[in-house]
Image (tube, rainbow, N blue to C red; front, side, top):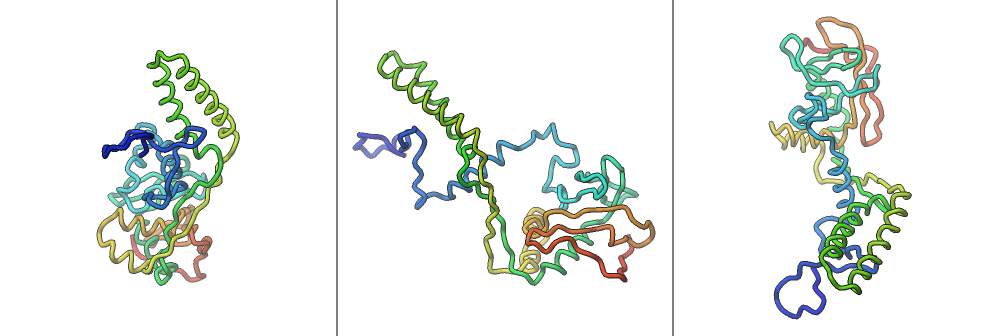
Length: 254
């Protein structure tokens, strides 16, 4: 916070701004970096409304694999549901189903990544004009309110000039794509240890799983008493790539 000329103890309502009227951030005392904040704002702005999402995807953290299961034939997310009373995922297009996926995916996740150091990925937005658009829009709204309230011609001219300058910056910003980068932060624990520590907390376990697994793809396969594990392929965030099952692979009864 910054209020020019305020020598008292009260905290001002304004913030320190640069020549373009945008806030100056003191990163030494910030609780998150500017790229992290911009990534957060972008994720919030890009959220779909609850009404616009499929019913099965409205609570993505209520099921361990919700939003991570994709159909290998249609390249769309599979929805949660039940089949014969069992928890399952189904494709909204080709209608293939796969039940009890959690245990198979978790087993493979721990087999491939269990002994590895857990890496948490944080999305950061660097540079790029689009990253600062929310702050520009907010500042334009503030200046517009001040312009409507002032009766001073000189002040009105100053505000109008500042808004004109910000509109120019906004046009330039819209033409620049932000540089989005995933930064990995290492932890002191393994994936297996983090998974065990999460206990029965589905959201905590999902966070651990999500640090390693980008998606699991399901394809149609043999139908029988045992689940055909060759139907599943994995895309690991840590670059392990899709998993290819061994020649002799036996599942467990559904």
